[in-house]
Amino acid sequence: MAKIQEMTQLSPTMEEGTIVKWLKQEGDSVSPGDIIAEVETDKAVMEMEAFETGVILKILHTEGAKLKVGEALAVIGKPGEDINSLLAGIPQKTAPSQNPETQAVTPKENVNPPTKNPIPETKAEPVAVSPGKETNTVTSQPKPQSPSSKENGTNVGVSTNRGVLRVLASPLAKSIAIEHGIDLHTVIGTGPEGRITKNDVLDTLNKGTSSRSSNVVASRSDEVVTLNGMRKTIAKRLTESKQNLPHFYLNVDVNAKAMEGFRADLLEFQKHLDPEIQMKVSLNDIIVKATAAALRLHPKVNASFQGDSILQFGRVDIGIAVSLDGGLLTPVIRNADVKSILEISREVKELAKKARERKLKPEEFSNGTFTISNLGMYGISMFTAIINEPESAILAVGSVEEKPVVENGAVVAGRVLSLTLSCDHRVIDGAVGAEFLKTLKTLLERPSLIAGVI
Image (cartoon, rainbow, N blue to C red; front, side, top):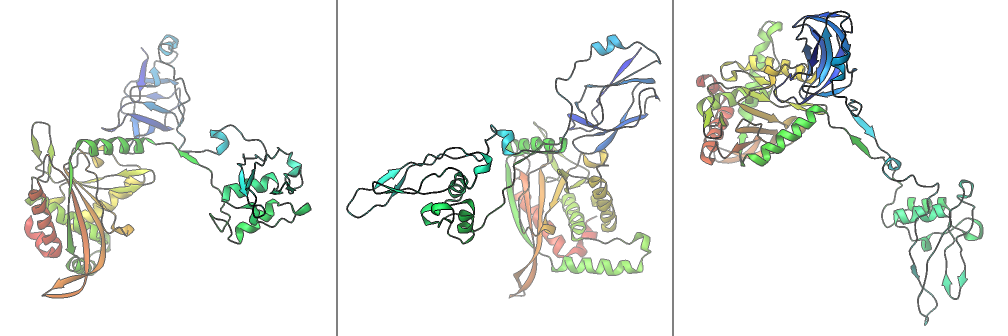
C-alpha cells in the first residue's frame, strides 16, 4: 500500500524545510535509510531519508519548495499502484512554495503608479513686494505636461501682477526644488523669458545653495529581504530568551600581554612538529580552553534552569558562535575542558568550515552548556550578548586594545582584552558570576596555570 513521505524534523528547532535538491526521481526504488533529497533547515542543509520500501510514485513538490514539518513530500509504493485516492486526501497548498532570498521592491510596487513627470502640489508662498504694502501670497498650480514638454512646455508663469512676483519654472524643476528644499527665487533661469529649467535647479544644487544638500545623491530603491529558516529561528529564540531570562551583565578587563606571549610560544614550538599536526592557534582557542577550565571549577555557571530545579552539567560543551551569510550557528566543542589547545583549535576550524558550508549535523550544533561569542576580529572593544537557551550564560569577547595599565605601581602601555558575561539571574547570582570571571581572568593572565586545572 502506498505511503506518504512527509517533511520530517531534521533538527530540534526545525519547523519548516526547503527542498534544495532531489537525489531520487519518480520511478526510483528506495528503502528505509536511502537519501532521497537534500533539505535546508533552520540550521543547515541536511539529508532526508526514506522511511518506506518501494518506488517513488509521485514527487509532490519541486526543488525550492518550502514545506512545514509533517507536510506531504512524496508518495512511495509499489510500481503501477493507483494513488489517486491518496493524492485526493492531501491538502493543497494555496500559494506557491517558493523561497526567494530577496525581492527588490521599487516605489511603484508599493503605491499607485505615478503619472509621467508627476507635479507635486505647491503650497502658497509669501512673496515680498514694495515697501509699505501688504505681503501677498500666490499659489502656483502647474498643469500636467506631456513627456515632450518637460523643459519647454506651458509656462507656470513669471510676471508681476498687482505687485505679486510669480516664478517661471518647469514642473520638473519645481519638483526637484521641493525635494531638495531649494528656494526658486534664488535660482537664475536660463530658459525662455528667464524660465527656470531642471538644469538650472541642478546647477544650484551642485553649487551648494540647497538648504538640505550640496550634492545630487542617487536614489536607491527599497528592498524586502525574505527571512530564511535560520533567521526566523534566530529571531524567535533570541526574542524568547531576552523576554524570559532575567539577564544581567558582568564585565572585566584582562591584561592580554601574557596570553599573546603564550600564543607566540605555541606557534614557535609547533615549528618543531610534524607539519600535518601543526595548527595556527588563535587567541580565541586559548580563551575557549581557559573558559572550559574555569567552568570546571565553577559548575554553578555551567548550568541550566529547569523550572523547579537547576541542572548543573557534568560535561563542559562550549558553543562557538560562527557568523554566516544570513545568520549564525554555534557549533559545539564537546568536553572542551579535557582537550588540549591544539585539539580545540583544530576542531573549531573544522566545525566553523562545516557551518559556513551548511553541512553541520544536529549533534554538532545542539546541546551545548555554555557559549562564547567573539567579535574582537571586527574591532569591537566590548558588547553584551543574549543567552542561548537553555544555557544560563554566554561570554562576549571583544578585541585586544592598547590601553594604559598598572604594572609594579607604574602606569605603562598595555594590551587589554574586555570580557562581558551575560547571566541568567534565576541560576547565577552576581557573586557567582564574579568569581567565575575572576578565575577566568587569572587563567588568561597566567596561561601556564591552565594545565594545572585538569
